[in-house]
Image 1 (tube, rainbow, N blue to C red):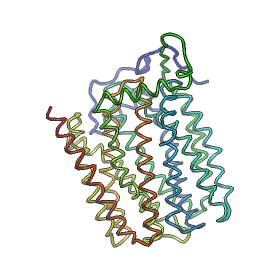
Image 2: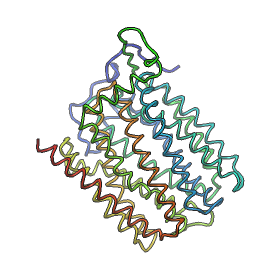
Image 3: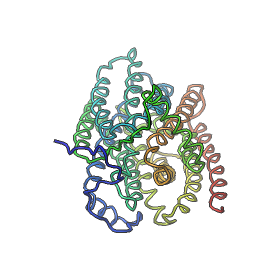
Image 4: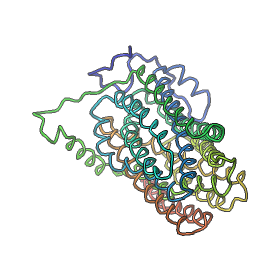
Length: 439
């Protein structure tokens, strides 16, 4: 049986965990070994995410290939990505309230089990007339994920000590990235060799394994008593939602950090271009999947080493992270300008790798700074709001990218425009960080 959850604990870390060293540098590989050795609870939490993420990328590549077979349309790929992004923008307020009011472990397990049945629904698709089902299933799958993600990210400080937080976020970003690389590459190989249906079945199995591992994680559930009698505003979560917005309005530095990922999302249509370059510009293999698998894999590899490398080279303090976020936007801009003119898949893969060294720095550093700055009782709502804005901007960028392709614009020209858009948030963040760091 899974270990019981605490109903009254207010500690951010499990009381039974053994002590850890006072400082574990995030730029040293030895620190991650010590994290796993000293915190077995976090190890199980981490492994559940690893398994689930591998399946997610199997799913992405399989559906890219399926849509290419059914439609061959850039707009179809855009609509699939929009279906993956948009639910979070709509459901995030409710998801954040739920993540702050109920057992985060129970939320994650329920979401994993639900997604088993959703992804198996892709196996029902047989002909172009059923392409609507691809979008419907993607919408439902991502709606479930919208509740899973804020619960998981808000839980990290509850399974780690403060001195382990840098390590956990660097590891989380690197793990997501490596699983993207491994999952996309394996997904491309499996799809090319045995068809997209096999990749879908494997994705369903990963959700089952993830749920089983999460059931073993000790994750304190903090119950906060309310003063006075509950009203309908309490039961619907409206008071919690309003309190979250008030917290955000009163903490400008939190609001600024919340916008970092949305700044990257302005150029989020590049995710469409990876699939277009992989499946049409540099097609590999008869059944497809190989080219997009390689590019998504290199995206993951670049993102895996980005935060660890930058922490080692530029430092781990909050001041260092503020500066690095701005530099990362400019690195992404230059890398994708080069990608737009790549003469071959090999060169394209290299530039994707470099671009996402920068992209991962924005993601991991802003997440770490938010986890350090936001109180536990607001954390789920803040992360949900962050993802809502991110996915809304990402959906708009993705739609416009697909539309531009269908209007006849050359893929390389579209990529140039998307790359240059990185300059807008890059300049804005650099000016903001300069003012904040010189107060």
